[in-house]
Length: 279
Image 1 (tube, rainbow, N blue to C red):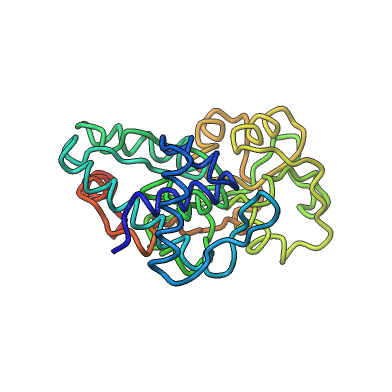
Image 2: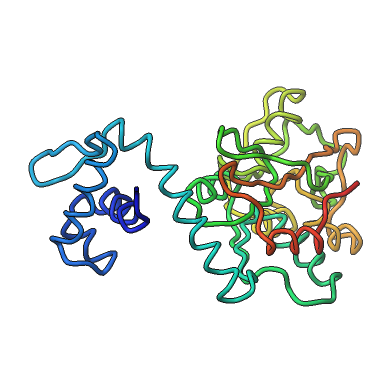
């Protein structure tokens, strides 16, 4: 029977490229790590690595095992957590607009014990990649994550509006200086798909790595952008910004992201009870 230790060594060898460094990573002797890998390959009847000089390079059989090995180790850690701390440990990944604006408000409205211990904020592609590596328990994303191991479930909806300083009023949208998020951002992909297809000749003059940075640049009069209403609400109320062409506002779907091989834990259920999908 396969052991969790064998799978742990296997994954460590993938990360480090050798049994010597893998042994250090999992706190084993080099001989114990080599034996664990040999026993795993013997049990499966397949070589998992090609020996290239002194390096071990993952082959097709190893790549087939890798996601399953990760899933098994994560499930084992989840089982330990149930008894170590009541299953309260939960790592949530949120894309930037959700993590910076929407999620804090929802957690504040819950007025109870926080249902997660950590929120990691990154763009949609980064959240999806970390979910695939089992580094996060749950994702909240603004774009789409099209990977067969990831399951997207509708969670909430968001309105995106074109905003600018008052000095830009009355000018053609296609010829204005546009400020955009970086590639891989859910906000960027939605704007390109839903808006730029109807506006010919748009050429972004600047890319910035967060919606808040874009918000500040637009307030400073550098250009226009299409941002979540959650981001710009206060500036709209104060008059610093205005909505241009409200007929081009975008309704976008926000999603829950789960790993197909990772069942929901009690901690995930508590989080969803606190921040449920909109009906």
